[in-house]
Image (spheres, rainbow, N blue to C red):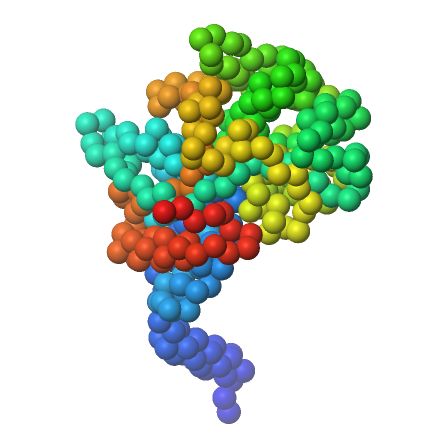
Length: 332
């Protein structure tokens, strides 16, 4: 007679053997870690599916962050990342063209620009003033005390410091002194007050940026404002046009003189600077200068899977050769 304990042992061994057999038949996949700016999440998820369809042995893992935070995953947190894609190309040389170790090689020495965008004012049918806002009066609507405005944290995300730049450019473009303080600056503690010297407007941020009331709301990344818009937590958000389009929002197009979307107006955009108060940025340059929006992609020098990462980068660049709804605009 077979004892129950022996029978159970045989069953357990059979299960383990079957599991081992199944494992042996499944090919091991290379896990590729990709860190993009949040405004690239939608296009990169589509690209991921197409890439994995062609390369079933590669598992692309995408993790979105604000552009500054995306770079810091490599430079500060020292994570093993294969590909980084940001919404501000200048962040790569500023933050990654530095040695990984004292006297060592840089985190990277190259990047590939691949797309552009522009800043718009996104809103919904329920937003206060939605029935009256236009591309001519948007700044007056946002200046109203009962209107709540959102943008991303400029310490973490390119769209955040671009929201500040756009508002400062609007003050000059519309000839409305004090417009920046009315829409944004006075809603913070301490207030954000631009300075003007030699034709340059500079907005200096404190170490910690804190809204003083409910007039302004900030989030770590611009895509995190979308749920607030949907829920009525804010009335308007500074967003990239591609994000507003992809999420089916209403939006106001801004004049090219202020929307950071025109290469021909680069000299005008450079008249606004934002100085980040975060102490760690001092060693890599804390000043962000207004310029046309350009997305860029790179591979850290210590990418765990450089061959596969290069394949994915090439795949992304090829995918952005054509204009697609809800994607940043391809550039030459």
